Structure formats: C-alpha cells, structure tokens
Amino acid sequence: MEEIDADCRAAEIGCVECKKIMAKNLARALEPVREKRAYYEDRPQKVREIIEEGCARARKIAEETMAQVRARVRIESKALVS
Image 1 (cartoon, rainbow, N blue to C red):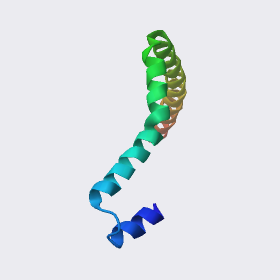
Image 2: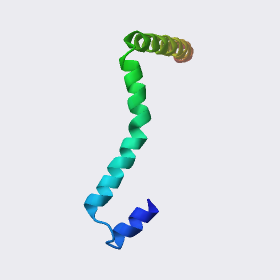
Image 3: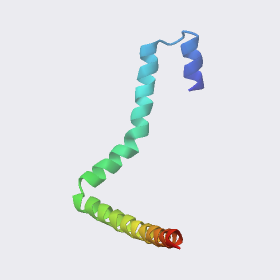
Image 4: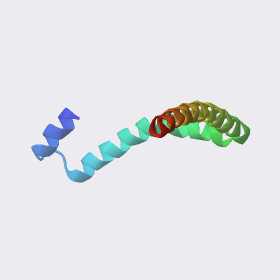
C-alpha cells in the first residue's frame, strides 16, 4: 500500500491502474469468504443446524438474563411497597 500510495501521489501510476491493483487484491482477500459461502451453499442442512444451535444458545442466555431481570424487579417492587 505504501508503494502504491507513493506512486499515486507522484503520478507514476494512474487512477485506473490503482483501481485494478485494488480490485485484484480485494478479489484475493475475498476468496476464502467465497469458498466458505460455496461450502455452506451446498449444505443447507448444516446451515439449519448452525442456526438452531445458535438459537438454543441465545435462548439459554436470554432465559438466564430474564430470570435476573425478574428477580431484580421483584426486589425493587418489594422495596417500593415497604
């Protein structure tokens, strides 16, 4: 990046060339994401399992949080009544 920055500022390379270099590097950087997407695209059942597992974990955390909230509300309600 430093080399491209210096070359661009010195007008040694043009904007189109900068953009081509950026596009090439971006495509290379996104390749693992594309591969992972293709993997899961071919395995919809695996995606459903992951979503269900995530929902179960989130539900457990939400239930614990709501139990704490309800306990706190009961404590606060009793304090207001007393």
